[in-house]
Length: 186
Image 1 (tube, rainbow, N blue to C red):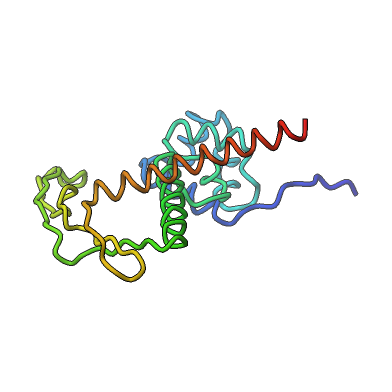
Image 2 (image 1 turned 60 degrees about the horizontal axis):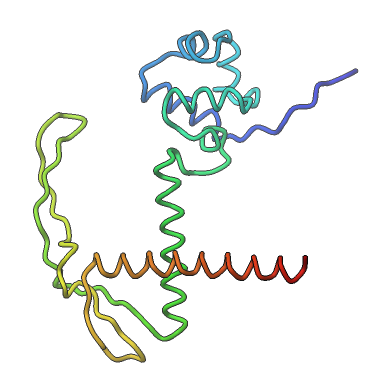
């Protein structure tokens, strides 16, 4: 008996396909006909984790509904490109903080950061709502600590700029070292 070999199915695939259907208020048949050019039965097998969703279909769905194909098939947890960019930035800033800590620097957020009201329009209700956000230019937002002693203070914006600068410079330093190593080996 000759059985066709298939890729393993990630159980998140079906959950995420159902999420796309629900968020966009579409049926399996509509997804099948309008996006994938397949039958509703084929889409049902992807939704019910009976067959793995081919990458080309994940790309089509992703393009149409603004999600990452890797998220759709369960390879990662960043649903959109913005989520992925945020995750990468977060990881980079954590590494920068570890580097500062290794050389004795520490940033402690203070409790007395000013908060300013910001308005936004709710997508659900269309109402204007207000939330309070930390003032990014408040000069006392972070205590800068070196060797256990406060040596200064900085704003959230200054802190973010410092972390960005460290990440950028670390990337440039790695590039220079990599090029040097390649030159030495070449």
